[in-house]
Each structure stands twice: as structure tokens, then as C-alpha cells.
Image (cartoon, rainbow, N blue to C red; front, side, top):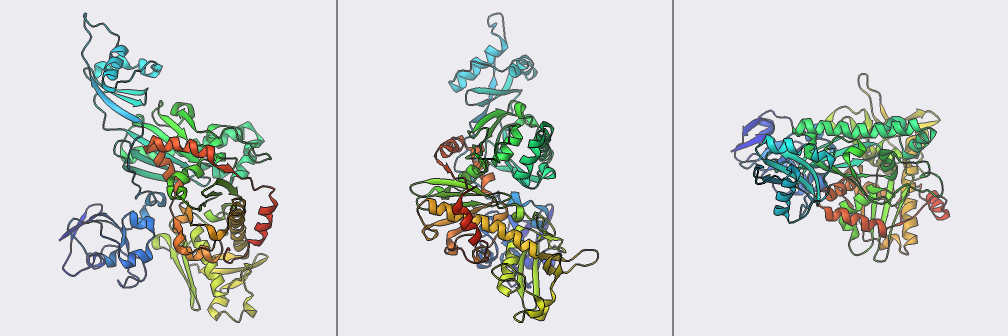
Length: 610
């Protein structure tokens, strides 16, 4: 039988042959560490046609997002006629896209629509103005009235009418006419969902008619040149109006760069993108809009605007249709922004009956707690360690980053994105490495790296990996080859993670206490964020990043904030729901809280959180 290997290869498979066997026989690249035994989980392929049910090995080695996105282990797949396979997905595909591929909505109702009209030509018996002619025809089709045209539309209506013999397409948002185009373009209607993270920005292009994902791209937020976290950027913006403008220009450039990339890859015109939904924390929201941020970081921590906003692309200088509708999800407080509201919409199980905790992990960490009586949210000063910032060999999750670590007496095994030589470590790798170091006895629960000369519990191999570093010691995860340096974790790196983890733990304990429940009363803990997708429950439970509850109650939901932006883009009812959430969620300010401070000091230990 024949199966297709993207982009343009077709191979023949043989009877009683696995997909792994067929790929190897045809000399196609696939990792085969365990010789097809299903124990290493390395032979990931993405299947786009005739997707089989996940095997026992798939469920063991792949997370839920990967399975939904079509990943399977090649060694477990029995080839079938019509299968379409994509190889080397980890190397070529952005993680933000893989986290969105499985998203499907029950209904698409963006409130944006295109209507093609065919009209009679003017005559001495019908001397209506061009615009009156369009409005009359449109009202006859929709049953709605359109009173106030934009000058943008009025200036072009005569040319548009006549260029395709009185056939034109009108783009509507509810009762507002956004655009008119010559001919029938009713099948080309697009929108974008934008996630403005402190570290990176992601843009997803969707077909607003079918609800299908067209493309996702992401890139580092250009604002990182002015500081790794929101506090440093607020401080920079406060220094002068020029600095604030520089930050605004940086994020707009980032978004427009991604829009340009999308348009070139999908071959659409910017005027065909008529709707945008944006999520971001309150600082990112304010900097994009050019709002004053100086009051966000000082008591009483007041924002300029928390309500949902409806703007145009022309107002914001974003390169879609100038009349395109741009919706910004509401903020909850100075450090709990539209990204948290988006995460709630993107992970609707958090609103189900019972006690549910949502942890949105990233450069900033937001917590949302819902019980049957109350909804509360807060932000913790976790810092950028989860994104690799502040870590000696920390890096974003891209090729060359260590994303998984296992330690035995004989040494250290590192899983590296792209399967190449390691050049650094990303957040998920850092958490697993530190948990493995604790389990192996390289560090204790206080986070102190062992003194090799007295660490009789360690094998000689592990003792040899501990060496002096600036002011303390470090542990070698991977030895450098050629011109590459060793990748290490230092005592300072461990401390950075403890601070970040401690802030999250203390925030959880504070919220739970204020809600009048205990950690044991939680029915679920939901972790969101692209980074969180790649965490393992056993690691985050062991170091106390999340409450000590049964692992089956812990769920990773990927980049829920971006998913929330997508859901509100595709269904306007979901956008309207965000306004109700904004009104109902109570904001808890942890700054100056004695309860939080007390919990923080006790949350630095690398142990289970009870």
C-alpha cells in the first residue's frame, strides 16, 4: 500500500511492517533509540491522514496536546492506505502551533460576515446614489438597516460598483459595514488571535467561515531588549515619554512582523483580515495601547482601563484591514490581565462545578481559583526563570534546548529539542533536572548542591560532575563537544527556580485560605502556558510547584490564553462572556500581604506542597 510522506514523497509499505520499519527501509529520518521497542518515545511522527487510535506506548510517551495534534510513535503504527505523515516535526514546527492544532469549536459565530450583492445599473428611471443602491440591496438581504457609512467606504463605492459590473462583496460586523470589494470575495474572510506574552508573541490566523487554523507564527517580543519582566519595562517606560513610545513601537513591530510572515506564507492580502482578538497581561496591554503604566507598580496598583475594548486596526497601527475590528480582552487588575481571562475561556473546565485552580505559568504567573461560592485571581512575582531567563544556560524552548533530564548512578541523560548537541536548558528541562538532582541526592530539599568530597551517597560519576563555580558549586548536565561549553546548573540557578516556585506555592496557599478551603479540597489543578504543556506531573508534584493532589487531577492545557483569544475570535458569545468574568472575578493583591510573606518563606523547600 502507499502512504505519503510530506512534502512530496510517496512510499510503498510491506505486509507485517510497522511505519517505523517502512521509514527505515526507505532511508527516511526517524529516531530509533530503542530499536522499535516503544520504550524511548523518540520516534514521533505527525499524522495528517487516517489517524489511528493512540497505542499504550503513545499514551505513555506523548502528552494530551501532542496526541490531539496527531502525533504517534512510528514503531506502534500499522500503515494503512491513504496515510499522510510529517517527519521532523519537532525541528520545523513552532511549539505554539502544536499546542493549537487540536482546537475545535462547536460553533463558529464571529459576527463578521461577507455578503455578495449583484445590483441593477443606474438609469434615468433609477437615479439612486451609489451608496444608497448598495445599502438598499444589503438591507433586502439581511433585513437590517445601515445608517452611518464610513468615509473610507463612501470614497471607494463608485469605483468598486463599476469595476466588476455591479457585483461587489460587503464585509459586515453586526450592523457595521467594514469594507466593500469588487466581485465575489465572500469565501475569503480571515481573523487573527494574538497572544502578547512578556517573552514572546504568537499570532494565529483563522478562516472565519470554517473556523480552520491557517497558520501560527511566533517570535520573541522585541520589548525584551528593554527588560526581561514587566517591572523592568514599567521602570523603563516611566523614565521618559520616548521610552514608553519605544516599548509601544517594539510590540507593534513584533505583531506586524508576524502578520507579514503569515500573509506571505498563506498568500492572503492584509485587507482580507478583518478581525483580531488580543490577550496579554495588563502591562503588555497598556504598552500596546500607549497607556500610562507608572501606576501599575506602586500602591494602590491602579490600571488605566480594565474593561474590554473594541478598537480599529487603523487606531492601533496594526497591519490588517484598516477598518478591521480589534478586541482586547479585559484585565482583572494591575498584574492579572486579559491573558488570565483568556486562559479561563481557553480552559472552560475551570468553571465547572467544584473547586478548580488554574495556574498560568510564564514569565509572569497568574492564579485563578474558582469554588462554588467565589472566583478569585492574583499574580505572583515568579520572575522569568520558567522561561529560562536568569538561568546561566537557560534558553527558550527551541532547537538545542534540554527539555528532559534523567539521572542515574552511571550519569545523566538529556533529551534535547531537535535531537542535536545541547546548548542550553529550557524551563521544562530545568524543572525536571532539579527534581532529578534532588531524587539522586545531588541537591537536598533546601536546594543546596552537595559537597563532592563528603557526598558518600553519590556515585563517582555524579561526584565528578559537581565542581566549584562562582561563589558556590555547579552540576554538569552535559559535557561540551568541540567549541560548545558544558551545560550546567549552578547553585544560583537552583535558587532562581526556588524563588519562582516559592512565589507560586505561596500564592496558591494564600488564595485557598482566603476562599475558606484547603489544598486537599481542590478537585483539579489546571496548568496553562506553552511551557506548562511540556511539564511532567511527577516532577511538579515532587518539587511542590503544585499542590500535592492525585496526579490524575492535574491537567496541562497548553497555551490556554491564546486558545481563549481564538475562541473569542471565532465566537462572539465567548467574547461577551469575558465581560461577565471581568465583573465577577475578585482581584487579590498579594503585595504587602503578611499571609503571603509567611507562606513564601516556607514554600522555598523542594518538597511536596500540602
